Image (cartoon, rainbow, N blue to C red; front, top):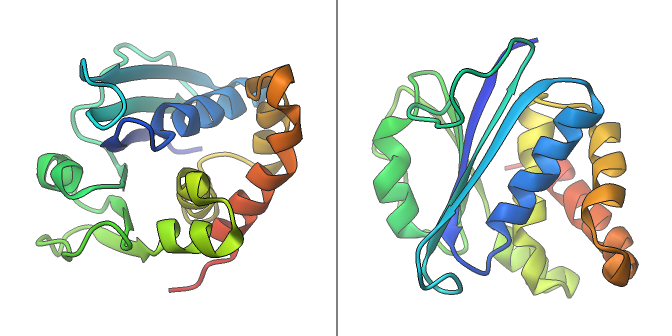
Length: 179
C-alpha cells in the first residue's frame, strides 16, 4: 500500500484534530505504521489549527509532513499556506463552502466539496470535517472504511457515544459525494 502524508488544516474549532485522530486511529486498527501530530495557535478556537497524519507500511522517521500527498483545507489561509507544499500528483480536498477560490496549481488534483453546507443541510453543522474525511477515504483508499468505524468507537469519548451514528452519516455523505 502507498504511503500517505496528509495535512488537515483550517481554523480551530472545525474538528481538524479530531478528524486526524480518527484517521490515525484507523491506521492503528489496520496495524499500519503511523504518526499523528496536532498543531494549533494560542487562540485555539478561531485560530489556525492543523495536524499531520502519516500512514505507512514502513516505520515513520519523522512526524512532520513537509510535502503532503493529501491536503484537506477548510479555510482560505490554510489553502494559501499549504497549496504549494503539496507533492505534484497529490490531491487537495477543499471545503468549497468556506473557500471561494480555485487552486492555482494544475499538477495536483483538486476535489471541491461544499462540506460545511452539506453538514448544515444534514442538521449537523459541526461535522463538515467528517464529510471531508469520508471523501478522502473514498478517493484515496488510504485506509479501509471499516477501520474508521472501529476507530470512531475508540476515539469518541463515552460521554459522547450518542454522536457515533451522526459521525458515520457525515462520513458516508462524504464518501457518496460526486462533484
